[in-house]
Amino acid sequence: MRRWSSSSVAVRALSFAAVAHAFSPTRTFTMASRYAAHPATRVEQAKEAGPKDGPNETIRAHLFCKPATDGVSVGDCPFTHYARMALAIAGMEYIETPLAPGDKPGWHLEEHGGSMPCWSPRGLYNGEGAISDSGAIAKMALPASAADDAALGACGGLFLGIAKYLKNSDDAKDGELKAGLDAELAKLEALLFATDGPFLAGAAPGVADCSVATKLYVLLVGAGHYKNYVLDAKYPNVARYYATASSHPAFYATRYPESEMLAGWGEARGGGH
Image (cartoon, rainbow, N blue to C red; front, side, top):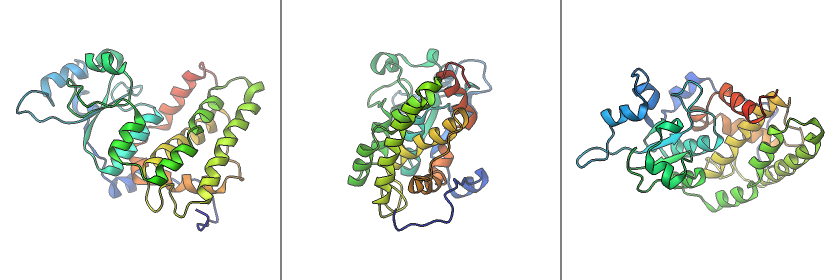
């Protein structure tokens, strides 16, 4: 990224209309659009309407995920965002399936502890081949290059640093936690300085970009709201990187609303402001 220059490091976002024109989301339809009008639960309706797991019936992949506050849309989860962005870049078709605890299939609870996101390639009721780790889902969709693996290793502590800082509501501890976050951002800044393209993977986004960009979204929106956080000027490459990554159609089309993020982190902070 050292060859890239910019007169501004302000984070820019594409309008949804522009993104919709440039990029078609990989999901075939959403649980919200298909089932919201019926009074029964989404899982009960899925039994009636399919996709099903029986012989001679089409089997579609599902991505189980946390529901939003409306109960039907995709909720706030950076790990789900990570997986969805990779699936979008790979062009994989699937059904977004927000599931409340009571709607989770038995196999999902028994074999995966109900963990989400969960990729279920054989439908709602067949757990064969299911994956309940966001990184594994992302790499299944978008195999990692050597550059991706190096970046994922270097940035392995980034989200923990973000989460500790953002969740903390004790002002006396903020300095120490901010220092830990800065150490992780410094690693990312150095990595980007040594990168030849606009993305960690090079000229086009790879699985590492899906991981890192979706975590920076949490930092800049969540900490921006709860901590008045602004990215320090000593991280110009991080700022340029996020401006580029967050404007990519796959990021924008799969992101969850900022309002959902703030509600989720507000709860994680104990309802604090």
